[in-house]
Image (cartoon, rainbow, N blue to C red):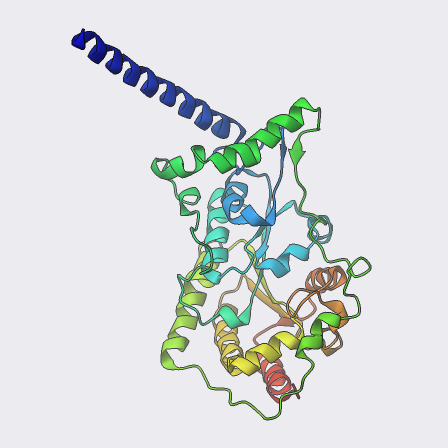
Length: 360
């Protein structure tokens, strides 16, 4: 009798193991087949794929490897406001967006390198140049993300278990895709053309009231320390690894970097923190290094004081409305606002004088 009980227990264990294996295989199979993060293949045309900001870091590498494009729009969240349709019209391209909200140069540089490896014929890369992050460590990533999805960025399938056996991916992304297809919703991929833009006519804060909390004037000037030797080395290594090296590897590609026209309130914050002069000095080092590479172009719009001093054109201290993004694209297409070897010193001197001596 005892041996029968033991035999039954073993059979139950074997049955349970087989059942679990089958269920996990089905789980993984659905995710691999639909692949909502584009890790294994391009989108399946009969399913609808969403691209929410919350998972952009999970999706970007798949976009770089599996989408059809010849131009890349990337950078931190300020680059989200560009319309791919307008970009393509101005530059005669077929572009994709790969945005890293709150990102670092390590993230954007890595993303650009992955895109270029997949599509070496890419003609133009447009990327933000957020100067206050230039003196971070060359390998620094956004620190408030609990787990960075590096398993989706490497070429190993071993750690893909974090993706293919992820219940949130299955029920949060795959299930809605299956449900949408059953309901007859047309397949495709969510467009990032204009869906994320800040339309000034539709913004609730068109009067610039968000800036009221920063309206109290400073009672005294705040010392602005210079970059120390360690920070200077950080700038050089950051720019070399994450900007210049990939441009050297792909000399036929046009790498366009732009300093976003953040509001004067952003520069006030840097001033209050004692980081404004450091950021401007880092910008000088970066510009000098980048201009040595023939296929890197730099544009800046901080001399447009009529824009950056008006809080009505911003949703917060950094993010500007859609027409400013459009203005940047048109200016670049017309070669306006470009920093060159001939005008760099004069432009940067004026920018520093304006921002350091501004009455915050």
